[in-house]
Amino acid sequence: KAGVTQTPRYLIKTRGQQVTLSCSPISGHRSVSWYQQTPGQGLQFLFEYFSETQRNKGNFPGRFSGRQFSNSRSEMNVSTLELGDSALYLCASSPATSVPGELFFGEGSRLTVL
Amino acid sequence: GDSVTQMEGPVTLSEEACLTINCTYTATGYPSLFWYVQYPGEGLQLLLKATKADDKGSNKGFEATYRKETTSFHLEKGSVQVSDSAVYFCALSPTLAGGTSYGKLTFGQGTILTVHP
Image (cartoon, rainbow over all chains, first blue to last red; front, side, top):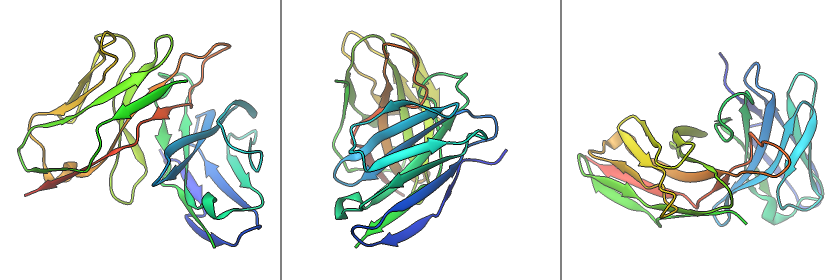
């Protein structure tokens, strides 16, 4: 079974631009979550989607948004990029029938903002 | 709010040494507890989990026991290998009012483990 796939793996943007990251969960997984990983703040929860609905949201500004499609694939968008948005963005999926918190992570999309 | 505090690193050990990485948490209700591991250049992988007090999670020689009285979930291994070199994250899945969240985890800061031959 294929794992969680994130695209693109690496990208470079400049301040003020926007970026869209994509995540394909494991087949059959209905819950998709996004995390930001930085050396200073560690791993921080961005949001979770389940059946195309946002279920939970972390403490991030409105510039960070996401959505989930009917096939469970998810995208996250960051608008008006700031230098501090440079990070590894991790997507994780769950079948939503297992233990809450038991997640399968992708390898991440590394965003550099110049 | 919920929080996880884990032992500051980095931790450097020789092969076959004993490992303990401390983890304590603050949470309301009855969270589930996890250890995730991140090998160089890879995403996070679930290492082990425990869903209620006194549960012991184990995998690949690693163990951790859910201690509600001390709000701890320390990771232990009796004999580490070079291949165990990675970053280890303690995490909790909260009890949420209004429904179950499958994807929301609160992570500790991570502990870098390096094992030398």
